[in-house]
Image 1 (cartoon, helix red, strand yellow):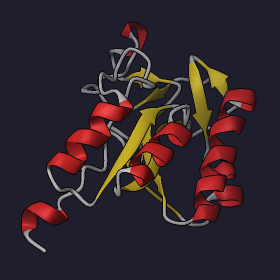
Image 2 (cartoon, rainbow, N blue to C red):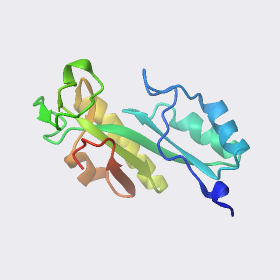
Image 3 (cartoon, helix red, strand yellow):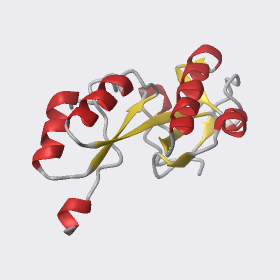
Length: 161
């Protein structure tokens, strides 16, 4: 396997990242195959809306699909409305948060197993149902309960992690 064959994009926003992603799933998978990449991940902002179509399309093309999400992490809990100071250089999504204060920061997560994928779906759903404040937010409690098999990293330089 050459270096080119082993390169994999792990942080990709698709058309399901509202106002942030431009990649459409079928052309994305087609380009991944054309470049002989063995796998690709999607990490849309705050949702897993495209996960099923992505998984199905990638599998059909012989590409390993990696399901992920760039979630909105609320350090004080998903139900808290307290603004956190993530540093003066923070570039939050919304204009009102541009001075480094925000009720969330970004956290990118990937599923490593089928169970982990189910856990990501649970986390994503609960963030919308129980944690929505500007964005669907997750917290440490959800990770404790549903974190098995999930790899998580900071989503941006001013993040909590």
